[in-house]
Image 1 (tube, one colour):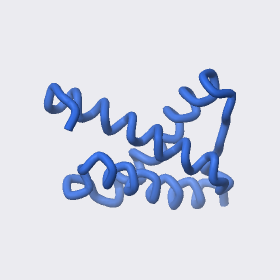
Image 2 (cartoon, rainbow, N blue to C red):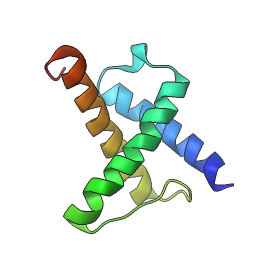
Image 3 (cartoon, rainbow, N blue to C red):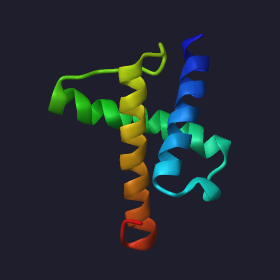
Image 4 (tube, helix red, strand yellow):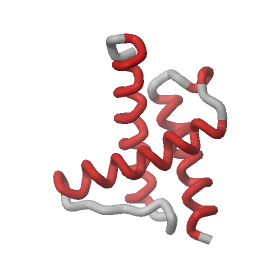
Length: 88
């Protein structure tokens, strides 16, 4: 059951991050899910050592959701740098 919640929460987090980074038109639902899940991993890797905060998207909680969104924004910022050589 946790993987279903991770897919749903990852999709929403990826979609919100793509809206913030102005990339929503170029991404579909599959990429939103992928960006959200990878963003959760990146967010936990950054937030854990820096702030001592951990969150999971397998069991929905607000902390894990916010960490996933921030991680997805970081991921999309890195993708923007690689694709265009600058941040949008």
